[in-house]
Image (cartoon, rainbow, N blue to C red):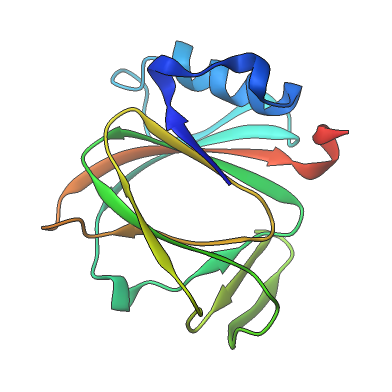
Length: 155
């Protein structure tokens, strides 16, 4: 997992595919585009612009991905994201969905919380369990962008 702020990102520290995602996040005006999916490099690297309301942590399931990593960027609002390392011993809530590349767990051991503020980004690899969209202090509307990067793009 990597955590940072889009205004202070040092691109040289990241693999090329993640640099592509971060440059997209830094150079796109998310105030003027609609929520939806945007291709950056076909199905290998694409962005999902999401408008959400944060929810109580107990209502959200922790998730992991197998074939894509997430670069999650918070454009507006605040949110907490639960994070943990996937050690393979969590109870599965929903079977793996290969179309969406997502596995949900009913809970997770040793979960920490990461507070996301405007401009923060976090990179989640397949071994990083994450529970995004949680309330930080009070419910609020957020606009976040999730850039999906195929693990095959990392070389």
